[in-house]
Structure formats: structure tokens, C-alpha cells
Image 1 (tube, protein in one colour):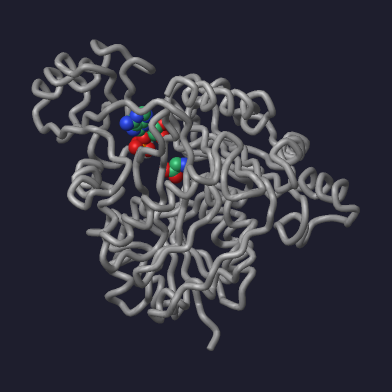
Image 2 (tube, rainbow, N blue to C red; image 1 turned 90 degrees about the horizontal axis):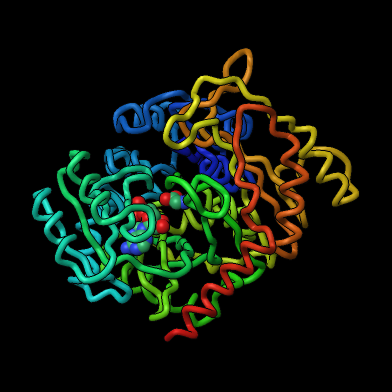
Length: 452
Ligand code: AMP
Ligand code: GLY
């Protein structure tokens, strides 16, 4: 039987998922609020709809006779789209609303960790009362992270002693009208992500990735959804050793053991500190941009994972190409605080093809441009909207270029060559994956470990 997969979501992460599904025998359909030209090209059909409307998504799944679905964005999970699809008989690779609380409710997430004794949980307290939270800031011995309990697209956190002073932190809490605030120990170290495919009580892990949350080069400016990311040709990153990676995997394993019936991707955001690996947060889906680093190297058939998950079978072991990746996002001017939406942008796909041709000796687009073999660059469209007369920005990240090569440095150089494809009206963090910032991270961890 040919499987029909409905992909929910229209960002760069979903373009990467679409590519992984399109490489299998499955028929791919997609739905999203924006028309992502990259996904639309790979799919047999693309429907524009509100992906936080469970009835609209299930109607779309029925229309295309979907036998499987993959949900990209957290907002859809939080809205119960996986529940609705499951209930309609279309297996959703993505957790039900209740299980997605591991991401959507940060207070729940920390209490869950404490209750199940999951390693790597920082000190924390939750508050419903603004003044009680402010008092805790005054009394606490050390720096705190201020985190709204609900979803904020990665932009709600304020770090005392880093981004804000204690006074500014209190003013932030008083000005914003968050219902619940989490105050937790500020972790100091280097962040990394490990994502796992989870179903039937099993997990299958993927190589570590480092995202860059801050808007500007040198890790300055406000937090964003992620400006870009890199991964190495092995499981760990240059500033980690295998033991650190294993510690993170142990945390994910303990979490999966404690979460009954969880399915989809479990994403661990970790901080490698002087004391070891601590948990910054869990997400209930692939990371964006991290999915763009992880999926191009996945040699295992993505459909096999989805079908095994649905059938209650053992998940296949995963195999990854030994390649490093660097991903850089182009974002609208003003992103994240005041993004210029509705601006027409150009992406010269010919540039991407020429870089690939130069590096592979092969001609033109096709498999090389979309990522089949060897060293290459890949274009991923994200939160843009394709209309009759061109591609327009929305309020979020526009497109990404991903380089895949033997080393991080080589992948980074290829991305920079390919970024000539970007026209005006977008901004890029060019420092991501360059040798100096990568070395600084190694030095940072060496220094932290020396202090221990
Ligand atoms: P989140 O909204 O949980 O994704 O957090 C956004 C970013 O805030 C994380 O990627 C970290 O860089 C930072 N962050 C969150 N919690 C902490 C913490 N306890 N200590 C230090 N940084 C944190
Ligand atoms: N890259 C961070 C996230 O997907 O939440």
C-alpha cells in the first residue's frame, strides 16, 4: 500500500521534513498558513489553512486520504491537532496536547522533571503573583532566568546578569501580563540540542546541533526563534566529548521512560555547564533550524520510522552520513522585534545550483540542489508566502541555506558562497559556524571545566 503523508506546517523545518518524506515512496501533501514554495514544489497538493484549527487540518487529511501525518509546529500541537488527527484515524507523528505540555507549559515541565527525578533539572520556583516573583528575585542568591510558563516562540525569556539587571527583570515581570512566571537558576555554559524520534516507548537519537538564538553577530541582541545552527560530522559538537552527548541521551531516555505513550520528536535543549549537562527545556517537535541540520544526513528511510511508529513496531535504528552541516537563516529586516512583513524578496536559486555544480562537478539543479549526495548546499524556504507575483516575507524567518560537507568550516564556506542568492530586505548572521566563534565555544567550555 502506498502511504499518504500529510505534513502540517510551512516553515524551514517543515521544508526539511517534506524533503525527507518526498525521498520515500510515500505521497506527500501539505497544509500551512503560508504557501511555502519549497514544500509546494515537493507535495502533490498544498492547502492553505490555519494549522491551529484541528477541524480544518483533519478535514484536509480526509480530503487527501492521509494514512499518516507529521506535525511540525508547536502551536498546532498545543491546539490539539495531533489528538484530532489520531481520533480521525490518521496517525499523527507528534504528541497529543496533554503530552505536548512538556514544551507548552514550562512550569509543568520542571515539575515533571522533579517528580520523575530526571537528571539535569535546575533549581526553580513558579509564581502566579507578580510581586511574589519580584520578591524572590530580591532574595535569591545568584542570577535567575525569568521564563513565562506558556509559549512565546523562544522570545519570552530574560536572563538576569546577562540580558537584564535584577531591576530590569522585575520591571519586565510587572509590565508583561503573563499569568504564570517560572524563575530558575541561570545556567552558564554552552547550549546544544539533541533531538530524538520517539514512539512505542523507544527513542532513536540524532547528532547534537548548536542553534544561535540571539539576533545579532557575537550573540548580541534579543532572542529569536533561532538564526542558524551547525552540527559536526560525528554525534557531538567540537566543544563536547562523547560522554557529554551520552549524558544528554540519558536525560532523554529518562524522560521517555516517564512519559507514557509519547510519540513524535522529543527535543532536548541542554546546557553544558561546569557541573555537567543541564536541561534548558524540552520541545515536543523538531527544532527549527535544527531539523535542517539533522534530516539531510539521515540515511534511514523516514517513512520506515513513521510506519513503525504507527504500527507499534520497534523503530528502525538510524544511520547518519558522517557530514558536518551549517545552516544560516535570512530573516526580514527588523526581525524579531519589528519584522518587516509583506516585503517582496528574491532568492536566486541559480546561485545555489552553481555552487553545487562547482563543488560536485555535476551540472545544475535537481538532486544536487535538493540534497541527495556528498557535499552540497541546500535552500530551505521558511515563513514566506508565495503569491502570483513573487515571494513575500511574513513576520518570521524567510529562508535558510544549509551547507553539508566534511567539516564545519567547509560547510560554512559553501553557505557563504550560496548566500549570494539572497537579495535585499533580509538579514543574516554571518558568524554562525565560522572557525573563530566555534573556537570561542571550545575555549569557553575548557575555561568552565578548568574552574571546576
Ligand atoms: P526557551 O524559551 O525556553 O527556549 O528559552 C530561550 C533561551 O533562553 C534558551 O535557548 C536559553 O538560551 C535561554 N535560557 C532559558 N532558560 C535558561 C536558564 N535556566 N539559564 C540560562 N539560559 C536559559
Ligand atoms: N531552535 C529552537 C527551537 O526550535 O525551539
